[in-house]
Image (cartoon, rainbow, N blue to C red; front, side, top):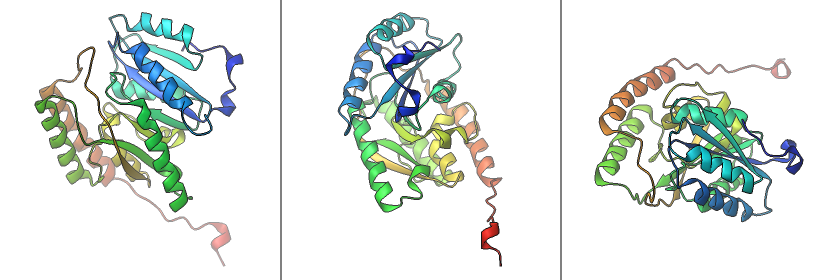
Length: 263
């Protein structure tokens, strides 16, 4: 992990860690980092934050562009996998290194708009007003109602969300959206496996929390290529879905009687 000058911030003061997994996203690094910085600076009270990019074994110019971004952005930290490990492991690496209590994730291809971060934070504020004791256990996840993807990609996503929601009952129309907000300690208590990022709503619900969907925008990909293949993703998705169904079926939630409650 390459860090910024520790004199620039105190980790105990940080409120948000923005975690961005990337693989072969040369051309998208500087524009997106700039948008994240602008979005975070525009939040109410300008809360202290850090940005953590995890380079998942890129073979293009991503590493060079991240090195350049480190020189111009004090809030940026970078971790690198020497071999590709997948998006879920990249998220685990970034969130494990995060120093703030709240984590914001978004995809590194530029299709998530960092300006929509404020929508997730507003949703969290509303939840705090309504259910202050429970809101910290919620996952706030983007819902890309208007997708700027190919027809095949949109159909694939719709089918996967429909089947997953039906079998897991997570009531989340767009679990695959990269734009999410949650507490770091909540994430670190979840089971870890490849494709974890696609099942976060169901896993959070399994842990006793709730998934709150927030409508966000979606942008066309301007540079680079998608890393997902239809048939491989569907085949692996079936295996992952069965595994998560097993985890949910094996879950037990004991009712604990604390000593102060006894007579």
